[in-house]
Length: 213
Image (cartoon, helix red, strand yellow):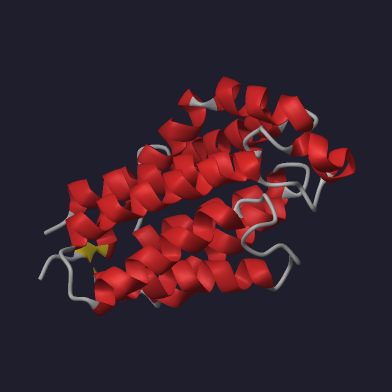
């Protein structure tokens, strides 16, 4: 059975950092269509600060998620700092510093992140937020674990589920945030949070696939 060694967190976390850095402008452009346009800048700021903080050091995946969450919670503006900070910190707590991250355990980590998010926001699937990306990604991993699927294959399925979830926000009406004031006019545009969540989850999946043993 394949696992991700918790001690090999550095490359996974750096993959997430680099993905946000590479998509800074894109996220800003998406956000600018129905938001205030600063999502890419804020996300890039937080992830870059974490990358600089990590430096050449090693980290476990769970410790790195907690440290990244702490930086985002405390250092970036808007609603996304507390949102992503909570998700990553709750994922870290759910891992419990186990040496091996199995597919089942990863599912529990994602569920803990989603539950933590539900504790601070009212948004649910269908409300045109990052929940529309995170929820199907979480459900896919849990279903794959229950079916006894291969870890790498499950991560590919998660990437597809995140992509589909992100794309679904185009046809939704925003109910929260600045875009909610546009009502029906918010349709036809991706949600910025759903987009960044997709980028993060796909980078996380790629990093974890490389780390499987």
